[in-house]
Image 1: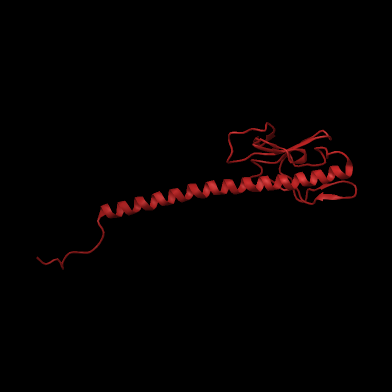
Image 2: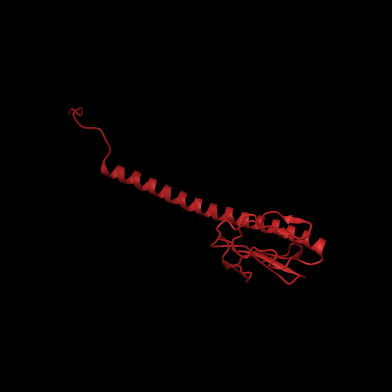
Length: 149
C-alpha cells in the first residue's frame, strides 16, 4: 500500500490536547504572578511602615512626644512631597504611599505618648489590627517596634 498520497498534519484531537495543555499552563502562570505581586506589595508595605516607624522614633527622641496625626498626614494617599518635620529637622523627606493607593493606605494615630501605624495586607486575611486603613488593617507597628499581630 502506498502512503505517499496522504497529507501530513495534526489531527483535531492532537490540536485540542495541545491547546488544553497550553491553557492550563497559562492559567497557572497568571495565578502564580498574581500571588507573587500581592506578596511583593505586602513586603513593600512592611518596609514602608518600618521606615515611617524609624522616623517617628527619631521625632520623639528630639521632641519628647510622638507627632500628632495632623502633623504626620498619611491617613490617605499623600501628595508629594509630604514629609515628617518639626521646626528644625526633617525626619522623613517623603512619606511613602501604599502601593495600591487609594484603595489601601497607611493609617497613623497618636495621642503623643504612643502611636500606631497600620496597613492592610493582601495576603493575610486571618489577623486584624482593627484600625481603618482602606479596609481592615492586617499589620500595625507601635513604639519600639511592637507589632500586631
